[in-house]
Image 1 (cartoon, rainbow, N blue to C red):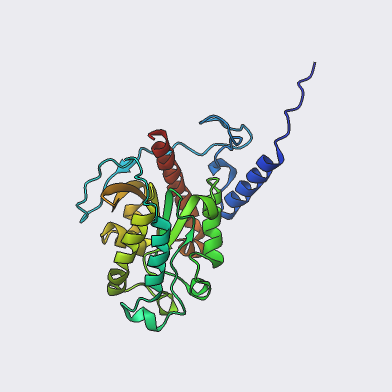
Image 2 (cartoon, rainbow, N blue to C red):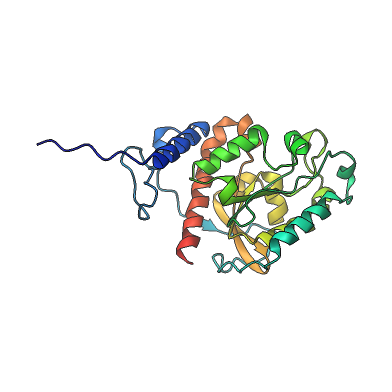
Length: 278
């Protein structure tokens, strides 16, 4: 007597798997680094035998790098409810940003770039500054870097429309995509603080050295900031922060995609930990 073949996956599950496999390919991940894909709705920890699981990551170190002095306490504190008018306040804040003339970037920008994605999402993604594509479109993370970010999210079964709120430390494009100047970061910092205060994320993914240094108030290198959980204060609550490379950097340095994948695994581990403590 022969075993009957397994029931085929539903079409929506097949489409989800195909999308995630394309994302793994985009990230340059071989089979040995891809997680097993559990069927949608499966119990936590369920796995499919057809793809080899990623190695178990090393224990996570929770720390805040010097010179940050904010204590890391209650990283998974319950997410406070947003004010009823938070979305309207975000629109008002976007209008204030559009009118800002706080630094010289107001004279060279085409338009400000406020955010993209879902302001109700529990994951906030913070990048460095808009590029040329963003300056033209007014949307955060478009072009090739945006496509790679979408693939990074898809590798975790996420998408920007539903699962992430995306913004930048700087709201205007620096000329020729140069590094943001300290005074430009300082000028935009109050906007970012208010923005994250209205969104109230439960976890933050920071993309790139300049964004990490601005959020964590440190001069440490991105290499030393990766691989551990940091914290950023939002409305009196310490929110866990994961640091990784900017997608634009990964497009130029393909060999570091595997390191970015490790950072994404750390992010997913933190998301699951927070979800289990609700």
